[in-house]
Length: 246
Image 1 (tube, rainbow, N blue to C red):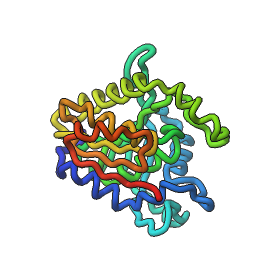
Image 2: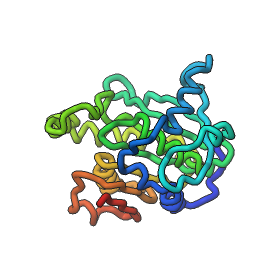
Image 3: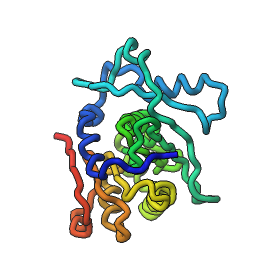
Image 4: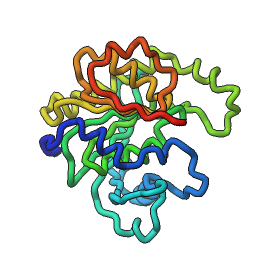
């Protein structure tokens, strides 16, 4: 059972900033397997069913990137639990991944909206690190299993974006928000939720906060958001940290 919240949700901003998040905004030419990938490979070797496999995390300072040494990896401690989820029913079912802090859980729920590459690898890796700081992070598959692939020509991205119907995406986000509310807020575990968005997800963060008439979210962190509508800013009633690329 999750513990009662020990911090306010402003801690999301400070925790995210402390992770040196700019390291995730650019490609890392010498990066080997990510922290999440290494834990995932370990979990995949276990005989337990996928939905109960545990992932492991080590809290470390990363001065210049996201890589860790093998020796540091061996000193892992059991801090994060990961589980695959199916949210919704029928054609409205969304695949999502929940990362929950175990020993240092502050009870706060966070929704992470990924960039165009979807909710695998880098998005989960970042969510993993946020969870290591005590949060419960839900990462939905915003693209229904068809994310943008790195090997696709950039000239095709507009055509691909047209397949991501805004109403469907916003409906999926709202459904995941409701799931978090039922799981954490309504249960009295977390007073409000946090919202993080990268690139494509950053633009959707603005839209999500603008239509949050029930004040479910307490704060947002937007990383180099795209297709953001500035006219929606007046409708946002919570603080948002914007981190933009040069």
